[in-house]
Image 1 (tube, helix red, strand yellow):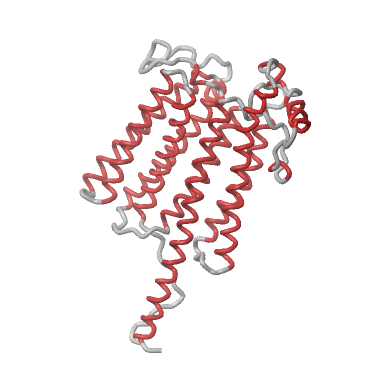
Image 2: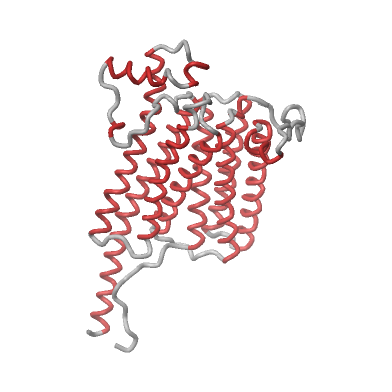
Length: 366
């Protein structure tokens, strides 16, 4: 084979890989959008205290909601057996039960839909050879996380069915964090399959951008703990908390470590410190990248990320001082995903796109 023929084969293969990447990338961005939706619906489910309305886990049969009055009464009777009903909602009517039921049902139905929309196209792309070798383990890992998340979701709900009137904050934060991991991983793969016009950033910029992703994810985990403890319903002042920069009572629980997970004041305080820390880190990153690589895409994205964190801080403060109205709370949760998603895309952007995998190579001198 002549060099000219081999070159044509390489370019043809590259065009084919680029087309396959475009299809896979579009599919993954659809998944990302659906993940945003399910996190928002999950937040609404939590804020409306709807998460315990379905007391059984039926991954297959559970897709069918009650279809008549008898089935609705059966579901309501099951809910009436748990502590949340007897201790908090003993005056709830069937109509009120239907309201909280539909929030939880929507959350579960959307989770099942995402599973199908991820698994079936993955199988199609895999069988038809449209997924590159290095991408396959990443996509299998995301699929495994999704399966794990289904089990963790029920594990979370089960914590509120006996001896509690709401789910465990430990389990809620874990559930939210795994959702965020799936969101981040999917976005990173999609970003890696996107053509990059800018050259990769220096190693220091790449490393710091990666740590910003970790910091954003940790801050989201802290937010899950706050939500699990209803920590935003108290100490609704800013910049002072309970009248002080560092409030008293942060270690009111005997076991010091438990305060960081079970004391609403401590958890909210740590979440505030996390926000300040993330803001400082993104400011430092923005200044450093603009100095080291001025007028580059990386510098512009670092600037955007800093502004997104500022915006998220403003939304968080507003949510707090207004005592967590549902609209502002959901906006704050969406803002957390936006910051996390942009941080992850920025990190992947500093590294450049995944190298194109072609099976044909040009042999020098051929």
